[in-house]
Image 1 (tube, one colour):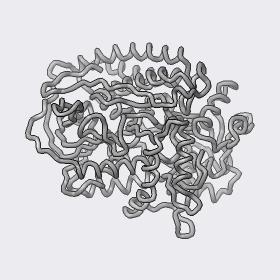
Image 2: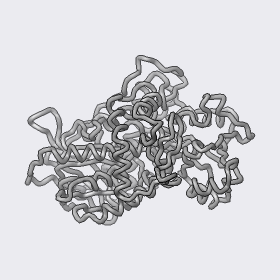
Image 3: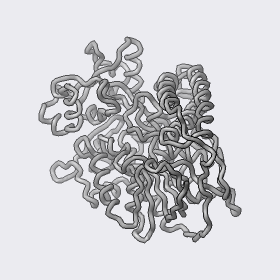
Image 4: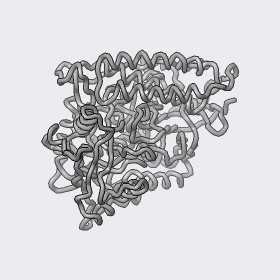
Length: 539
């Protein structure tokens, strides 16, 4: 069964990128925003640190640009980075206009320091920056009568058609699965914006919510968009290691305010890896922790902020303090057990700074996109900045582009020949298996052999899931499994192409940086199309 919906702009995703884009669009435009869970479930809400922006007299756009370029290991797009960084103060003021209460000191926004920044330039709200910003913007979006939010709705695939005037395809809408009704409906749209976030959930340990399954990246690739630099997965050095709490981030700001890393034997070790110690870039700190754990057989290391005053810790890091106390860890007196965990997808769908892709009328913004801003390693707190700037630029592009009226009907989804699955355990088993494969073989440290084994194992999973997808009705778990298979293979294939160690990609076979690879890794899209007749895609 299928039902049709029409809209001017379809936005997929309810993080800061998707919500900001919806809020920035004119009130006379009909907007449909779909989100897998409720509109609160996204990585933005979990972002503790803040937003990097040049706001102090001692700082400059040039300094922020240089930090971004240096951290990106030689493959940052300087023009894109400069454009985004210069928009930082505007975006902070836009958030303040909408009521975001940044932490202040002496009637000015207080700025904190994070790894690989040369200045204090992180605007923050205690240790709950993302959650506060997201709630405020989400509440504002819900008040707009021209924005229709469809919760519990998952993107299945984009609908494209050939454009006779140029070599690009047109995106004309999408198929969307409704979790409550278990039906797939068609949304016809003049413009489609994918703001679906990253794919960190494909790893066994992650700081991201369950929604981070690379849906937009996979769907755009299936529709024909190239993906870029998928090998660069950022592992956050410090995720809380505790059996009762999974995926809880211990903010980099904690190290920025003086937190120190120790082994279980109470030995400080970061000085052996980088002169910046705990404030080295994330790739270096994550690899250092990973190395200490593997060499000595540790399950975790420890992060200690207890040498700071108790009042400061409780005031500056209330969320972290409360979460740790909930499992009996008093961070004002005790060390915090931590491990690295997948955190951010630096690669993504090939896009301009305004989100425009290789498909007409399809935009990809935020973590799903690759603009060249992050290079081989994202600088801390540059992510929310990129989301806001891309939303702004995307809306400027949409507002001034020619809107074409189209009365055609799009093909309905046909699942008349499939049945209900009686082997749902196969999906959950393959979910768990794939995440372990990615963690063990395509993690912080890689090798040619590990990548080869991972690809062989995932190909077997893909074959089984293919058969399941063809024969049975769709579920959210099946859609997400399909997407993480595609994204995992894109990561592996990208990693195989880079015969060096650069930024977040470290290979024991090629341990040095190689100038030959001072460029992006591209994988072309698959170019499946719906040309006004429905074809059930292979997984």
